[in-house]
Length: 102
Image (cartoon, rainbow, N blue to C red):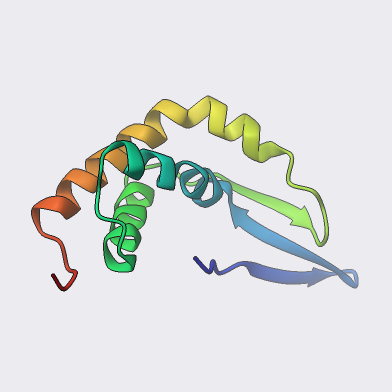
């Protein structure tokens, strides 16, 4: 899944503004959908992903180009219950009105 990253150049140094919650949700999405036996067609996965993100607080960080993102695992641990709940709720909503072709 391609994600948009805002790139800014300050003092000739490129930085990125990222919503780490996007990465946290993506990291858990597949395994949670597997455990729910949810549809994993592109439309359903994208819909669950969007619904989950819309129900979670954004966590924006600024990073320099090429920087290793070490905060991801800490954020996942901190918000894992909330993320799991948001993905599960999104999956229930999508399963009631899927937009895929059967």
